[in-house]
Length: 144
Image 1: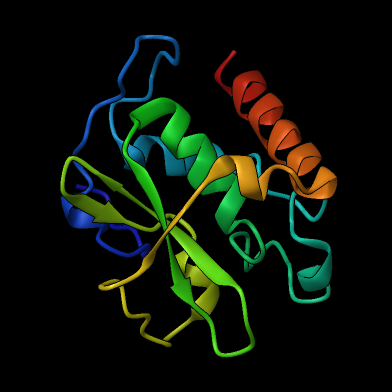
Image 2: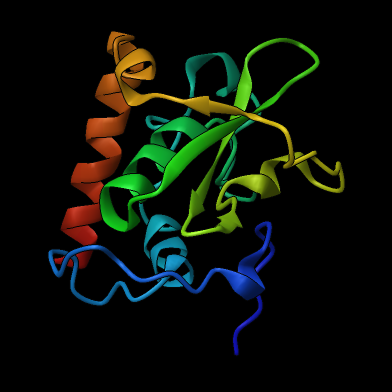
């Protein structure tokens, strides 16, 4: 099996809840597609100075987590960050994984006792909503 660097990639074995996205059988497949979609335009504006083609996942957590939720269901949770806010990740049928964890390098995040995040709150921010829509559009284009 191909190795990945995102949190819990080895056990990210949940299936999509619908057949809308052909070729996506698990979160690892989704990660492979997202590598072609993440960009400075989909990165959170406050983190764009850190984004690069070496650090694709920088500033992509919430929009990626809600796109994952669209495809796999489950819940989005947030790890509280020292500087404020949350880093979003997914839990589906008891399976926890974080496709954007690589942005933290060797820093270990605490994935227990976190706070559920809601799309209505996150996507009420117009910038975040437009970045989510752009990511979803790119994702669908790559899949054909």
